[in-house]
Length: 342
Ligand code: SAM
Ligand code: SF4
Image (cartoon, rainbow, N blue to C red; front, side, top):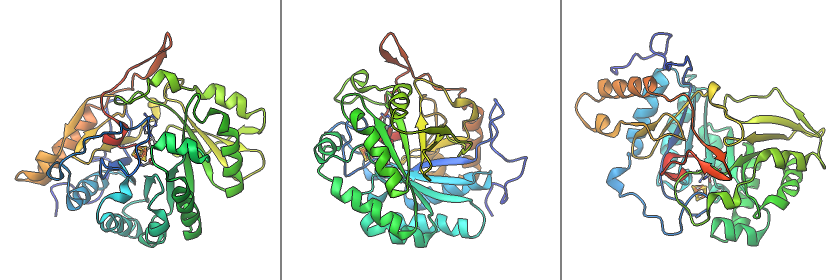
């Protein structure tokens, strides 16, 4: 029996000082990736040495600590989660918790390259939804944005996920001068595939080759442009996440807009992030964190872990500080998205 209580109840739930209850964990399982998207990574990233990264067993233990305290949904991310060796072991273990009713959902955010081989196994393990990142349908633009010629593989991955029975949501970072003109075509493609599409404003996370401001595209403008072609009706659909949703024409496709720079969404934040090195980040856009790797690897791990979770909850900041001010992005943080987990 762990040092934490075995069932979540109102006394051991993770409630922060603003009354927000943590029910959602994003767990980054690796900092590595087979792509090098320009807004996310530098070409010459130095990846972490193996001993700094939590083992899959340690990741399961961390997940269990969160589940015992009321977390109901876990999303695996990275880096690219599906390039982590033996990742199916962790996915199956968490899928078993869904099957046992201890967890509502295990899901992941992936770049899709491994899905042709792994989509069926994910479904069998208990995954029912995946977010797949795709910024363009044009091979040359893909090559420039992801710095790898992998568009065809990603499209095959999307088809494999749909065929396996997974509900697919496409994540697209909207970039001025890069995929801006293509966004209506991408939304049309999503309606034809029967998948949802969420657009994301570029966030100032880590140093990359382009100045962030050069490609920053406010989604308020994108929405105005899309409405020249599509009817976008506000939808009551909500996942507890930062996106606002719109029903697209009379299709089943929902368009989500994530607007960290033009519209702050922190009041309803229900999430924490754990990096692959075991740092709990309470906010994507702040540097405060609690390190649970030492707790995990020292004596009396259960109690030490419980202390870390309480400390993180108590210190969860009210909001991020991302914003545009006089044409400059402010509120930057030094970590890349691939370090914190998207
Ligand atoms: N490799 C997986 C993928 O690409 O889906 C998972 C990790 S990736 C870091 C998660 C999400 O973060 C992706 O949808 C990606 O487009 C997004 N992302 C990365 N860097 C970003 C940034 N600076 N601003 C906004 N979104 C970003
Ligand atoms: Fe890799 Fe995802 Fe970052 Fe692209 S966004 S470099 S696929 S981790």
